[in-house]
Structures are given as C-alpha cells and as structure tokens.
Length: 112
Length: 113
Image 1 (tube, chains in turn brown, purple):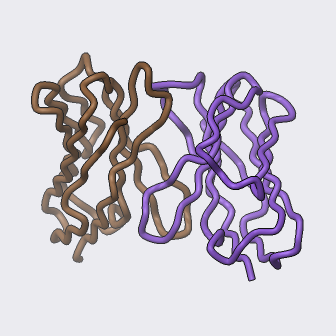
Image 2 (cartoon, rainbow over the protein chains, first blue to last red; image 1 turned 180 degrees about the horizontal axis):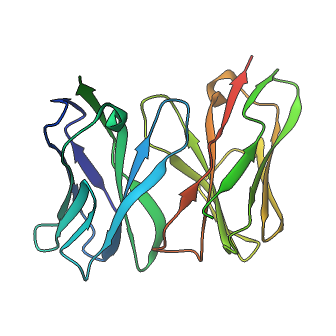
C-alpha cells in the first residue's frame, strides 16, 4: 500500500519568514495530494490540494509543488503569521486506492 | 458550504455504556468516513461508506458499529469500549469515494473511563 513520509516533524519560523514542509510518497499510482491544517482541538481543515496533472498550485500565501518523477510534494507558506501555527498533514490517494494515506504531521510554530 | 457537523463535541463514557456519535453533511456527498485520531498522530481510517453501503472496514473491533441511515447521516455506535479507545473521532465526507477531496468535521473527543 501507499506510504507517505513527512519532514520535518517540528518547525519553528520567525513571523514573516517562509516555511516549507516536504512529503514523499511510494505509490506511483497516487494522483491526488491534499494538505490539511489542524489547530488544537479542531478537525483537519483542507488548505490546498494538487492533482498529478499539475506541477504547482498557489492560493495567496500558500503554494504546493509536485514532482511526480521524484514522488515528492511540498507545502510552501510565505509571509508567515501567528495564526499559521498548527499541525500540518500531507496526504495521498489515487486510482485503485480509495484510502487517503496521511503523513505523520508537522507542528509549525510561528515565533512573533 | 463545506461543513460537516458532529455531535457531541465531548463524550465521557464508562466501559459498560452504550453511546452513539453522529455526523451530518448537506453537501450531497455520497462517501462518508470515520477516522480515529490519537494525540500527535495522523487520523487513522476506520470505516468508509459509499452510497450508503459499507465499503471499507479497516479491521475495526466489533465494539465500534457504524451505520449510515441516509446519504446525509453517519452514526458510530459504541459499546463496551476500552480506555485505549479514548481519542478524537473524526467524520469526513467526499463527493464520491476515491481520490476526491475529503472534508472533515470538528470531531468528538471521547474519553473512556
């Protein structure tokens, strides 16, 4: 089955700087890669996703890049703000794989 | 509207109790999911319902019993739980099963005493 690795497990960034979280996946059939943000005591919230026919996608301060050949994808957050502090999960799924396989999570802390 | 609602928000139960968790969505989604999440871990899939039929059971103990009364509702019936079952239980839904966007509810924080 699919295996998703996520790094780093913790990340501290000065407010205003950029943060990058990286994930690798094992199943070349995976074609859908969402990113979720989970704040304390809340459910995961979808912040951005990308499909395998696209290399990059942006939404304001958030961007995701996908390298199908290397089987890795990354989340980029620019101009970080205190409200970006949360746990971020990457995930992967695809044809023949109904399940969403999650990475292990990254705890992002924005230092004011 | 991409809202999935879950009730109750918190639940404390003894090992001999029977309780139920409820999940609701009105997005017209035909796939609904139950996940279990322990502290500092990613969500773990428990069950998937597709078009109101159980599609996936991830070898979950029978003390957890899912039910999908209609396309908008998903229940999780709990009976004779163990303290290690204490966790955040998350419901999610997607348009159809497969590589589709899943929207999560806020979860039910369950404590088994």
